[in-house]
Each structure stands twice: as structure tokens, then as C-alpha cells.
Image 1 (spheres, one colour):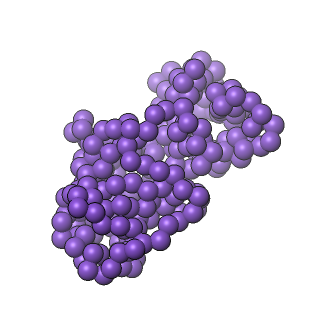
Image 2 (tube, one colour):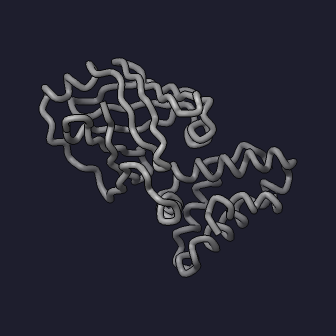
Length: 216
């Protein structure tokens, strides 16, 4: 059974739509225990989610249960490397995303960095293959999705090859569940090609590193 539907099947046992990060951290810790790793991935996810979320979900009405499970599904992908790895193995990657074990190094020059913000408009492929368009300024990063929704983030340049964006708000179903206001993401320009920059993404404190292509 696909993992997304495993999670949503738990609404039948389904506290509060505000699932805390501390609860999700406990979910993640249990996922990586030796005994859980012996189980098939779908069983691992089902049992661990049920163990930690059942006391919460049982106090909610149906719509609140659905909201809590939706939030758990997306927020865990950000906060739990193990859950993200399980999900990636279960779903085809139609984008350019590649997971890494450590942060890569940039090969670009200052001249390449200077050109980056001058371009202003970029796009990238989601894991699903959908195209997301980006509007950049010296201080903002704005995502525009195919369904007409958006995400707003502030942008702060750290050094020549590296900048950080901070989540502000979104009306996109995935992004508003994946991130909270104040969440930070660190990007690095790695290589410049004829129609794209190869980028790295780091989720600070979560040991998650990825590369992807930012097209212009």
C-alpha cells in the first residue's frame, strides 16, 4: 500500500490539528530503531504513526483528523530524514532532486554569483515533475505553483556562493504544511550551465542535503 494512503488510513483511529514538532521528533526516533527497521516500510510507518499520534487523533473530529494527518505527512518529510528516504523509495522522482550524505562544494567564481540575482526569474521541477516558477529579488524569494498558489520567503545572502531563505507564508497545501513561519533553508550555487544553475539545498539541523537544477 502506498505510504500516503497508509497515513490517511490512520484517520480511522484518529488530538489537536496542531501536531508539535516534538511529537514528530519522537516519530522519527522510533522509525530508526533497530526493531522497526526489520519491518516492511509500510508497516513501519503505520505502526509508528499509530503509536505516537493515536492519543492525539482520537480527540479530533473527522475534518481535524484529516488536517492533522495531512500536516504530519508533509511536516515529517522536512523534519525526518528517515521518513523522507522511505517516501522517496516508494514514489518515482520526476524532478532533478538528488539526496546527498554531506554538503557539496561550489566551483563558481564571484562573477557567476553576481549574475545570479540579475536574472531574477527561475524555475525548478518538483519531485512530482511539476514546474515551479520563482521570482527573486535581493531580499525575497517567491514560489508560484501550477494551481495558482504561492509561497513567500525572505532571502539573506550569507557569502558569495550561499544564501538562506526564511519561510513567511503560503496558500499552497503542501508548502503550508511542510514549513512554519521562521523555518530556514540554506542554498548554495554549485555550477553554472547554459540554461540552469546546479544548486544544493540544506535543511539546517536535519542532516538533509540535496542537489537540484534551477533553470533560467
